[in-house]
Image (cartoon, rainbow over all chains, first blue to last red; front, side, top):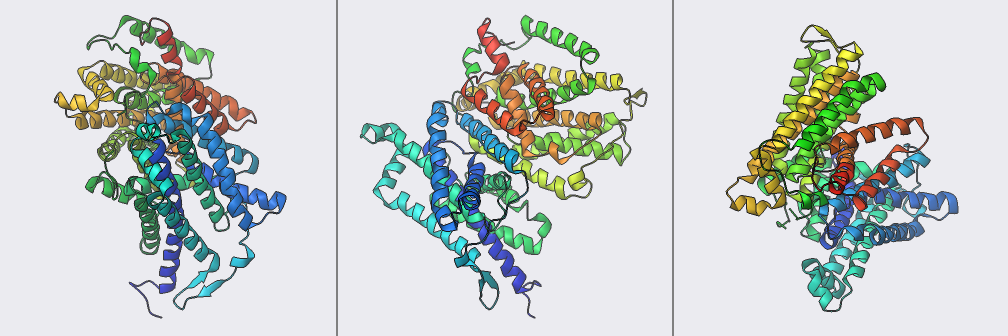
Length: 295
Length: 327
């Protein structure tokens, strides 16, 4: 059997696919973080907890109400988004006049509350979530076996990321949003309801996290801790990419996922820390991040 | 940096360099008396835990309160030093004082590396970078051989301080910890009231202006970071000797969060705030551990309440109410 760099191609492509899946989640989450940061100047520490919430809502819908994956894919982001809107309206909006670090601290507290509550009621062990019938099985691509569901996750996250990019960069609403990011006071003076836009942006950003949670539910188990470990890696991704550009956040997410997969093949011991090492290197070479600009 | 990291700042007509103000010295004397008497009233191991975390929080506060830098990765220094101290004392057979010193030196070195990277960005990015770097330390602690993975390093011998004082005696251990805490506290006190501390405050208030005055702010920030990391390491190493234990809990991001909470609750930018905050949080965790309430939820609620309602923290609020002067 032939090998590539001494690695059987099955293992190589298998890990690359896994990396691509991880990258999809990095991309979805860092996209949400970037959108929220652009508008609110807040780093949403609760993003990981809300991703977990999305997965749990899907799981609860299935186990308590018998509502399946496809409806959950629509409902869970709505629930998470609504929760986000409430959070923004009642808590976050009080902090805009203060240093941005308070937003970070507040959302950190919120993350502890959400995560702690689920841990209290459901324990730390994961709950399995079945793959929907339509996406069971897989394709033999000749060089590797592709499970249908994993292919779907990659495609779905790509579509969502591109749609978000299109909505922000190419539509009128997106133009308002970008303008409000640059100069909220002026945009408000033109008669656009900026506070509403801020709320909607936060709701949309966390809904993306909820969507990522539902997509992740059948792959990883639904567990209260699934978000907190992921979010720190996503923070590193955001530092590497810089939060200036939507496309940058998405590309960095996928790129680092793939790189992590490659590390798992060639030097598995370092796979957990490779993203952080890359972050350190990027900080040395280009402190503003690959796609960033100093703010 | 934006202008208002905490409300305390507005009423900081900072005392000129030189001697600390009288009320501060008085408070220090009271604190000292309380701490000397404490082990006769309270469970000594509990007070030792408070002291270790109080020093940790004071070290963290040096950075956020006086240089305006929010590090979300201080667990790396605390836990890293705990591992080094535990390993050198248990496996190499070093005396405890040398083990703690090595732990502190390790944290200072780590602080130099992390600080040099993190100060290249500001504000929120600084927090995210320190968090990510400390997570790297966490994964290393999980995977390296000498750290014992999930078990950590257990049954670390306390040994004899300077070869004579038996630290297995609770009281001699207690007063050793108290001495370590006081050394750390006085270092921070002197730093804050030194010209160096004044420059840090200037950077916190208005970095571009400090630069235009000719200060190389990056050097000052890095020095503060290294000092803070070293003191956090001193606390971590001491903790490893007291509890004869170094585990993953010490390097986890939750630990970084806990020290932020202690400082926030007690009062960012006050000298005594972190001590009060640490005592409260440790007491609360002890109390909650016995009850059925979920600890992270309670901690999270306090976090949110602090950020929304009293950003000056307990000591900051008291200081603002009585005389408008900071202790």
